Structures are given as structure tokens and as C-alpha cells.
Length: 309
Ligand code: BDR
Ligand code: CA
Image (cartoon, rainbow, N blue to C red; front, side):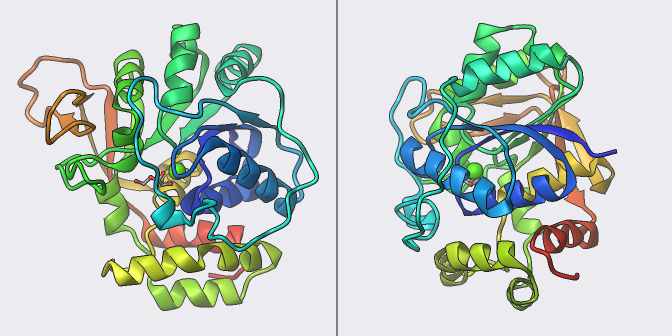
């Protein structure tokens, strides 16, 4: 049976790969869009373009343009100023929905109680609003999978312990992590352990279909950035989270712990603080994904690009 997904996202290169994987393997109820990697106008436009490229009818719900409390720098230097590698693509002909992403999340979860897996691939701003609008939201969805955090402090932002999605809007992450009794957390450090070999990824793109050609074009700058930063391979954080959402059995190692978000630290704002030894007595809220089956992960990615593994 195909999973039923509702995706909160800020496309974004790795978001794009995750969204391709979702449409290849699941039914997608909607894309809730946030500002994050780049501004909301770009992330919305990118989502619409991707849905059109896939040939899907998935509704796109624009949501929050900025963090709840404190403005934060975007990640255009990684994803391109337009978030999709500055390829100058033509706009999709389809339009976004009128309904705000947070309202759409609340409505869809109420219409389909217990059915949807929420996949959060962006700063958690929309989801924080949604759970404040409807505090029963966690009980109305089947699962929540979050891409975010750096569980031993090896982040990817200028607040060195913070990962981008959490660091961009720590207050929103605090709201979500405090409200959700149990969620899967795919952190940045797991993503660094599950990169794709550069040559394998390029061969996969070359062997794929129209989706691969689009992805090849938009991801060129980011792949060059990965090489330039000396990454072990292509990092696709949101794709790893999507693999966990699509195929829960892909997780080969996990640790369930309480995770909180630092909001005030001068050096550590946006850090995810894991109570590894249970000293605080708080009930664990996060299943932290430590490792997945890399072969199954690569098969999901190759399939989404129309290539053989
Ligand atoms: C996360 O931040 C964004 O830049 C990516 O799209 C991903 O969601 C990785 O830290
Ligand atoms: Ca993202």
C-alpha cells in the first residue's frame, strides 16, 4: 500500500529530491510551503514547477515567509539565489492554493484522521502554527518525520551547533518538539553518514528520465558546493528523511531520547539538546535515526529519477 503523505517543505535542492521520491512511492495530499532555504515566493514557485515537472496535481499551500520571532539568514549560497540552482526555468502554469499552509495542515489532518504521515523538511514554522491552531494535531496524524537538528552538536550553520531547519526558527522547533509526543528525527549528522558517491549520483542522473534531467540542472551548483566543501559525497538531507517516511523498515539503528531546542544560547541558539542519559527525567519524544540501509536509500532515489540502481 502506498503511504499517504503531507509534506512541509522549502524547496530547495534536497527538498526537490525528496518530493520526487514521495511522488514515485506515495500519495501526496499536499505540499505546505515555508520560507527557509530562500524566500517564500521562490520556494512556492519551485514547488509548483516541480509538481508540474512530475505531472502531478498535488496542491501547493504557501505558508510562513519568516520565522516566528527572529529573522534568520537563508541558504541561497547552497541552493542558488532562487533555491533551484538559478537555471532560469519558466514558471509553471499552475497556481498555488489560497489556503495558508498551517490551515491546510490542520484541515487535512482533521479530514483524514490517523491517515497522514507528516514529513517536515523545512524550518518548523508552519507546523508550529498548525499545532497551536489545533493542539490535537499530533493525535490526528499517523506519524511525524522531521529532518532537522545535529544531535551531537555538529551543525551546518554559523551557530555551529545548529542545523539549518532548527537554527532558522528555533522557537517553532521548540513548539513542535514540545507538543509532539513521538516523532522520527533525521538529523544532519545522520545525513553526513549517508551521502551518495559523486560518480554514482552522476551516473544515476545520466541514466534517468525527464525528472533526472530537471534535477541534474537544478542541483549542479549544490553538487559543486558539496565538492568544494570537501563533503564525502552528495548530501541530500531531505531525501534521507523522505526515505525514512516512505520505508520505516529502512532504519537499521535508532536511539529514542528526549530532544529539546536551545533558544537563547549566545553560541548555541538553535542547537538540539539530547538527553542521552535520561538525566532530566523527561519522557523521550524523538526516535533519532542513527543509520539506514544505504542500498534501499539509493534504490528509492534512483527510482524517483527514473534510473536503475
Ligand atoms: C536542511 O536545511 C536545508 O538547507 C535543506 O533543505 C534541509 O532541509 C539541511 O540542514
Ligand atoms: Ca529543506
